[in-house]
Amino acid sequence: MKKLSDTYKELGIDFTFPIEIEDANGNRTYCEDSDGLWSRWEYDANGNVTYYEDSNDYWRKSEYDVNGNLTYYETRSGDREGTPRSQSCAGKFDSPRSHVCDECQGLLDGYFTGRMHQDGFDVRMECQKCGKEEAVKFSFVTKQTEAL
Image 1: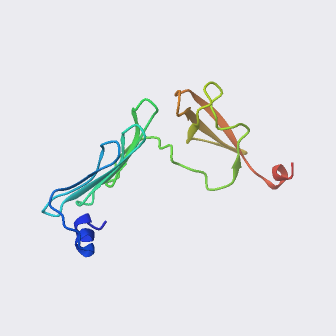
Image 2 (image 1 turned 120 degrees about the vertical axis):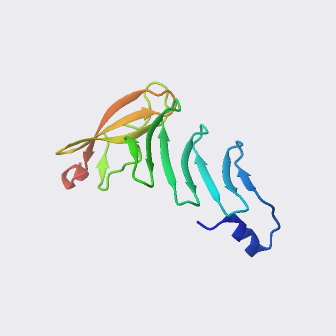
Image 3 (image 1 turned 90 degrees about the horizontal axis):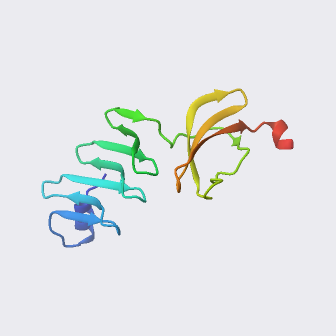
């Protein structure tokens, strides 16, 4: 990643070190010191750090449940723990139900649970609003089911 100080220099913008940037919620998103060391952060809507990287070529991705508990992380060095919700299916699939919570109408967010079956796969869904969890079966779309 290009250092912000280099961009400022190219644009002729005066600055002093340290360069510190915060988002609208007061979360630090970038910091660079006079030695050229920098760090950057990304956050979810609840203020949890979802991505971090720095000038030492280190990075960490993190995911949290609706209560702010860490549910998954991985690092540049290959450390990882938990099950990422961000896994996706490369093929077409169809769900027999909506992705809205029956109780509070909040959006459901899901991740692949590793249970594949001949006609599709299972996904663990969690409501982003109330935290209710449920298993949902997804079926692969075939030419036969598309015709229906």
